[in-house]
Image 1: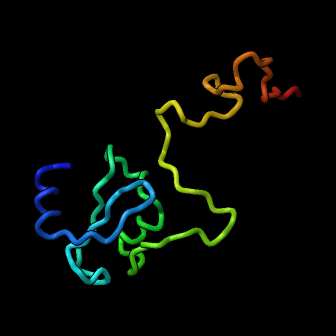
Image 2: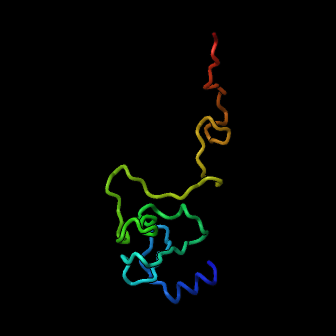
Image 3: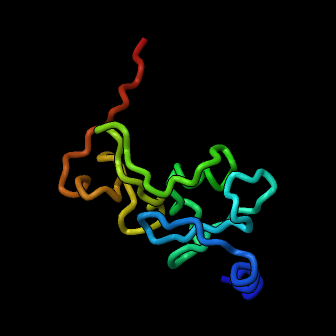
Length: 117
């Protein structure tokens, strides 16, 4: 975090809440519904935008007025938020990709069938 962000947060920031990843969300107004207020996040660890869950993203971008402090999923099919793993050891690769764990020791079979007139 930069010195300017730290200073601004110290002087004007009102802690609104935290998400499950321990990212902290701030507003420069005590009235979190104020359309002219500034909203920002202080990341826990590396600064990575995909760490922000969708419900907090909506609040940061003023799509919703109420901060999602006690958010819980409404449906059983909803999954827990996960940051983008591209470029890490946990990245997803389909089974047909050479970097996939299931690709090794597999018979190479092409999904492509050339057209024969």
